[in-house]
Image 1: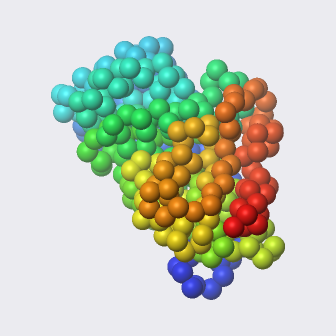
Image 2 (image 1 turned 135 degrees about the vertical axis):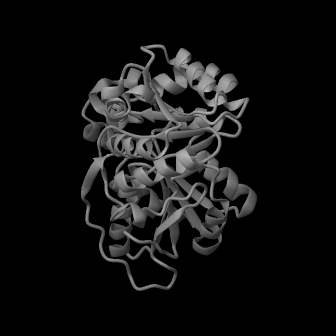
Image 3 (image 1 turned 30 degrees about the horizontal axis):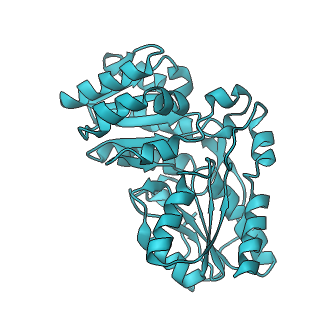
Length: 329
């Protein structure tokens, strides 16, 4: 779905269609990148059937390494390979990779600025029945806290494939967040996604407020846009797939041109996209803001759909927060 230019005719109504899970799109794109780049190697922590790195391993077994359930060692192995001229992709559940191996990622990858690609799968509460021990709800904050690390949170299968290509092409450490459930389509294909690190994509124009979202909440933002339009509220929608480096120009323009910003994400309130956008807006163009996120709490076990509804990570909640923002200006 192409971005709507300012002053363009009203965009067609968003039709909710579920595409593939972003972890599946990651696995497919990684396998294809392996055919083009013989320096690409993949290291997994014994969850390759879940992260989908097994697909790379099937095609390129000589460049695939399973180090077992040893995430800290996995980070060190990736750092060594990067220092030797390889382009390592290290993958596990996001909570295992970022929480278990954080010190090694900090000192072995981020500090020497090595060309390691870190991929956290099964992020957020939408993984469902696996429960809070498996749910990465702080991974974006942790990754953004690592100096020099690019942090990517694509919204659907098409933007994920484009993000994988951008990640591999980028010279330096990158964290890519992907999820387990099927994701609502925000784009028609990879070319439409036109992924560029550090740049937001405007999917809808609006004059009353701006909804900035990433991951699964982009689909919710597009649904909310249509409901808000029916209620006389014009909402701009930005897909902020790069949490770091943030597209500060897009944030400043949204604040100045629409007067208010709502940030929606599947993450804790502290340290995620909302915090990052608020910091930029406070410095560049202060405005009224609202936030849709998990808050300051753990979730529980249940279906992904049930949990997203219970914890307010839905289009309905985005609409409610947007209406509150519009009334509060």
